[in-house]
Image (cartoon, rainbow, N blue to C red; front, top):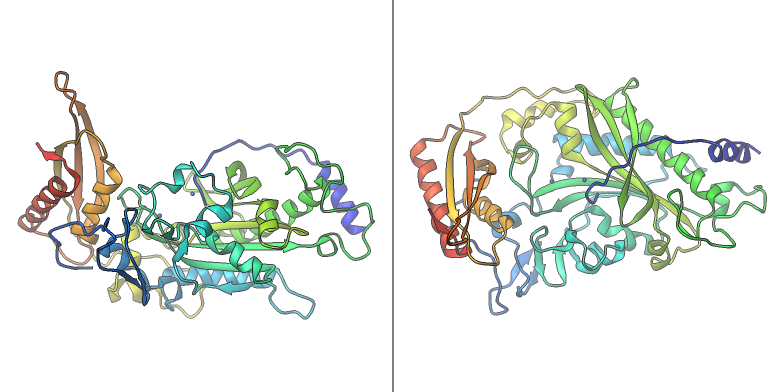
Length: 447
């Protein structure tokens, strides 16, 4: 009866929300190489990633600079800010969901390798073949059929097929992105998945007319998928949103203002983003939704209904700990790491800059080749040569010559080391090396 009363309340609700179309579930020192080491030939030496060899092909675009980050596992390092956020989310989920014996319902999986198949990263999540998120300019391909995962959701089918019905996944993910203080090509995600059968959702003694699936499926509607019953979707939505509102309050405080925003993801419907109000602005905290039935069908659990959510650990840590630059998470400097040596992951911490080194900025203007140029390739080249000495790269001007029709880009590259002051002389040398490498490898002409 309690379940049926809740259903009546949920079915009678009128939810007002704005619509937003967001991205997919929403980011050292070494010698400067003379070439950007991207392999395009099957005769190239194999890539070795976590002890496994992969033969490069014409789709390979992962660089040694990116591979240096594989295996760092920041989310597993005790006292690291990303590990603290992971622990806080895990602790909350374990306290919110318990089985009949009082044990945590959700299992945690944080050591799954980052090299996955294209099928797992995209196909299993129903990402269309022509979706822009598959492009080489957006991903790090190990080879045509293998990629460094772009999201932890790449493991959903694997874990569902293994028989898990409630799990958390945390790990490093990889995307070719712009360069600034809030974006980095390697970042960390955490997600949760829960699937339930009819008895788990409605209860053993529920009215037989309560079903997970509509006996006469109709067209897809904004509030539900074709096969699902409205009653099942509303109960799942209620549990999901109640869970995540509680998580937001645990992280940001009981009085935090929040709102739900309708959005689109290929792997859930309906889908939402949760935003919280911080510093007079709305911050997207996570994305979530009711899992697409086709994903559950393909995972061998088509008799169930599920929900999923995903969040970025860096985004939360930067806000909660007042960390101003995403590169700091990769620092080995004790002045940074020691600030997060706390007795309990719930303890409040506010990062205090160890020191503030000055910026150096240089502009680089280039004529673009006739075709085949991608700004993402230029950003990767800058990362490979400059590493974490580069704070930001901004396209500040675009120009097309009125007579020749040639296109030109002007990039402003901001250099700042996290641990020492850079001299203008060494910045100039690096800047010249970037220009020379871009000319050789990308076919541009420095103006």
